[in-house]
Image (tube, rainbow, N blue to C red; front, side, top):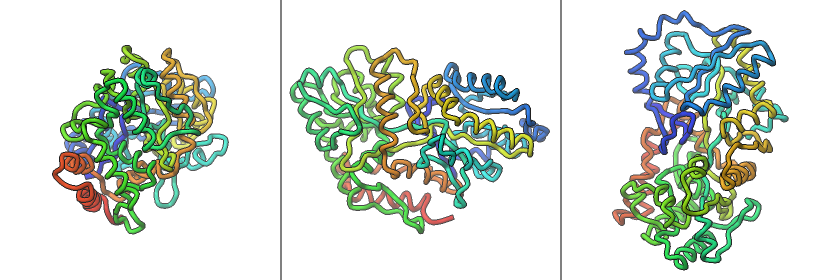
Length: 442
C-alpha cells in the first residue's frame, strides 16, 4: 500500500489529525468508479484556459481565488478553480489519471505513482534565486526533477501559558536567535508548575512528527535510512527518546496522552498546563478559542540543533496533459511563486511561506497570533536540513512504490511509557516496522 499524507493542513481537512490515504485502496476504488469519470475526453486545457484543482474548507480558498482573478487581469489566461471535498480527492485524482482527464494544475495532498510520470518539472521555479524557495522542502525524484513545491509549510512548535509564566516570575526566550535548550525549558516549566499549582508542565501531541522534531533538536536523526534504505537509530536518538519517556511521569507530562489518546490541546486550553508542544496549525484556532489566559508561541528548544519537523501544507504540481496547456501551467506556477504574488497568497490564506524572507502581513486581530507567525517565519530559515528529511523521504517511498501505512512510534512508545517495555525495545520495534514497510531501495 502506498500513502503519503499532508500533515494537519487546514486546506485539506485538518481536523486535528494527519490524514493519510492508502493508495492501494484508492486504486481499488478507481477501478470501481472509473466509469463515472467519463472516457477521458478532457485531455487538458489550452494556452488561454487552465483547470486548477484544490481541496479546502469554505472560506479558506480566499488566497487562491484572489490569485486566479489577478492572473486573468495580468495575462488574459483563465484559470478555472475547482474546489473538491477532501474525502475522495486522492481517488478523484487517481481516476482522472486513468481516464486521461487530469487538471492542468493542482494542490495535492500526496503523490500517486499512477500520475507522477506526468508531472511538469518545476526546477526552473525552485532554482530561481529571487524566489528564495527553501530547497529542504521540495519533492524531487532521483534525477533531480522537482515534482512539487509546497503551497506552504507547517512546522512543529512550542506554546506556553504566558499568564502562568508571569505569575511564577519565570522568564522565557522570545527570539529564535537566543532560544533555550530542552533541559532549560523543562526546568523552567517545572518551576512554573510548582509555583502556580498547575497540573502538568507540558502536554505533547501524540505524534511521530512532534517526536521527530524534539529528537532532531537533541542532535539525533530519529529513524533514518542509510544509502541502502536500511533504517536504524543513532545514539543521540536513543538518549532523546529515553528522556522523552522519562518526562511522562504524570507531573512533567501526563501519561494519558501517549498511552490512551487524551487530548493534549484541550488540556493546554483548560489553563492548567504550563506548555504545549504542537505546531503552527494551532495558531488560528488559539487566537479565537483561548480567552481565559494569555498564550504565546515561543522559540523551539535547540540542544544543540535549531530544527523542527517541517512538512508541506499542500503540494503544488503541474500536469503535462498537452504542449500548450503544460507551457501555460508552467507559466501560471511561475507567476504564483514570484515573491510579490506569493506574499499575497500567504496573507489571504494564512499560509506559512516556503519562501525565505517574505514577511507576510496576516489579517489576525490577535496579537499573540501575529507574534506567532512572525516567530515561525523568523525560525524556519534557521532550521537544519534534517527538518525536511521525513517530508522528502515520503516522496521517495511513493516513487519506490512503498509507504509507511502505520507508523509504529505511538504504539511502541505508549508501551514504554506504560512500563511494558524499555525505550530501547520500543525503538527496536519501531525500526523493524520502518524496515518492513519502507526499507530497501526501489
